[in-house]
Length: 111
Image (cartoon, rainbow, N blue to C red; front, side, top):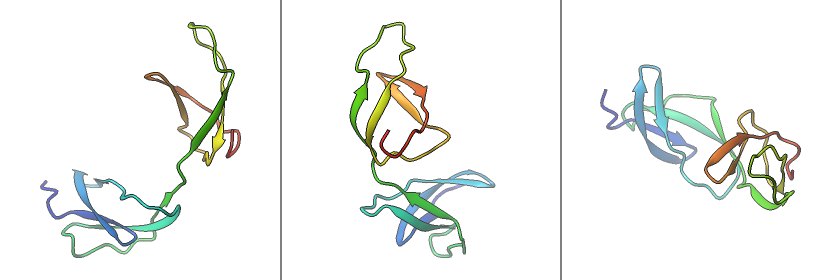
């Protein structure tokens, strides 16, 4: 199926959509300077947008200010606390060490 003309609208911003299958399309979010919820609609022709109560939530960019401890054995296994700001709970949190992602747990918006 040709994706030409398909679009998603995030608030007032329209973005191209890519057809995945008969029940899915993929859209990339536009940038925003304001965290919060925006309504999302889909259009198969960039003109007629669906009515939707679905929203996408923009969050602030998380910042890291420190790690504890800052070192450990090369064999791994060290539990590291990351401290910063604007952390948000997710079932899919991860920390990246070099090129390796490892599961992480949410403690608070700052740790």
